[in-house]
Image (tube, rainbow, N blue to C red; front, side):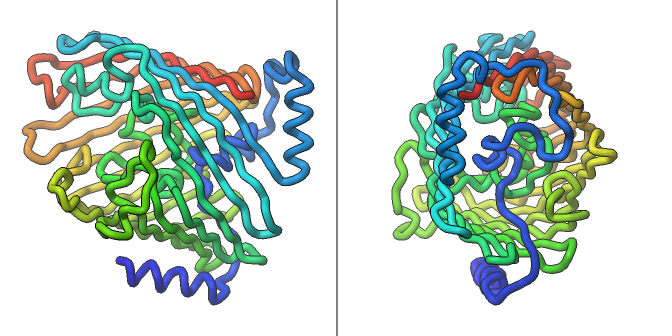
Length: 392
């Protein structure tokens, strides 16, 4: 896999044609851009710009000079009727993120987060606490202060290739599609990065993307499989435990790469030297297409051969709807099997994101988990959620 990555990056530097980046819907680059980039936003309000115009005018001046940043806060509360566990969870994420366009084709991206829980169980683990083998509030945990991005991006003059080196988050670009972000789309991991992929935490790595033709691209990465963003380090240089990925995909055009996209992802994660994580590898397939700049049907599937990933096999399908106010609705259904556990688990999630303004979003949601794998005495678990985001 490493040789394949080197070969891919060599092709990129040799000058393969065309433009594409590694900034998916959950990346800093996406969060810095209001709206979705394709529909015509018609916001209901100008909050919070209207209450702090001087602050935003200062940010605009910095952006004209190449430095863009946001400070935002997200909160998620959930409750469930599970027979087991606490029945409720709430947590928040405070983030400071941005990018500096240091040269014409080079930029520095950063993101610092503080993830904290208001309850004994964070939303990320509320499903598990209630007996469902399910991550019901992706990223909303109690991990504290984290350095989740600090990397350099270099792009070819003609956009033929993109290279990222530093503290990277592989879930920004591995097996993504238009509804992948846990901050603006689905909350359940079944509909985020494929739950059969044992993706590592944010850490030291290198990733590259190239366009192989007018519609075909490749993205490859190597990163620290033992990464801990609460304690960034260079240990991967000595322990050599790596996560590797290679993705080949097709898109209608590179300005729509994360909206019209069909791809196959192969990945491999080394076992940890201390025995806390076994070797794992697998493949994932994803197909999503933006119809009329309003509807996004999707189909996603994955399989893994180890025991470290959440599921052994998973299939998800659903539909997204993009409104004129940059509202977003989503409906998804997932089937999953886990190695060593008898039975099948089905998950249904529906949400509606109200975009009050570019700086304020409110997202109610509901999740139904049928035949929870860790609680065979309960047929179905229902979970209600409310997520908010405010951006300054």
